[in-house]
Image (tube, rainbow, N blue to C red):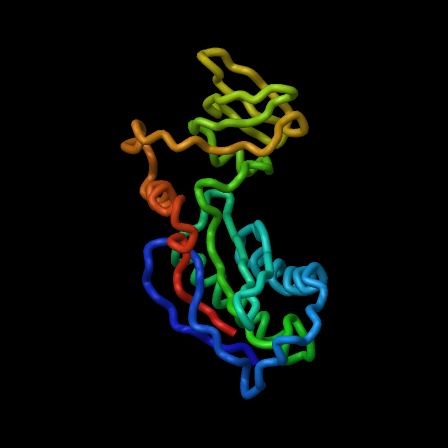
Length: 217
């Protein structure tokens, strides 16, 4: 059985809590051979992705790492128009329930105790998909376009490509010709940035600050 932590009301999305051994089980020996993390990640994704999709959001990433004797499962979710704190909390509860159900059905997702963290992408996340670029219209972005690196403002973006204003001239590129884009924080334009984006900027240098205390297993 999965274990629950306590939820806090911190101002940005995510989840984290105190790890405890799963329902009555003793923690497995620390020297037990490590299973293939890629396989574990694939099993977790197979359980988590349908839940996130059903809630109307996108599963950006699932990662598994070690923190002492336990694993940490980090789930990154996002929406076409972003995702707020309450929505992340709802998704976190739904993911937790799905993981419980999978374990009750006999699926061993991870060995021993583990901690679940659900959060939204930070402002420093790379722009790699068309929807990432659509959400960045109006922002200043640095990206490798073709064989050169450019910095320009996103003036338009769709499923075909991106238009950037570079030094007053608009250039268009197809997505296949662009590397991962990086949003450039413009502190002189903070009065034009939405409140949610300000939270992301404030937390950019503090990775844990875009997370809300939540589920532990």
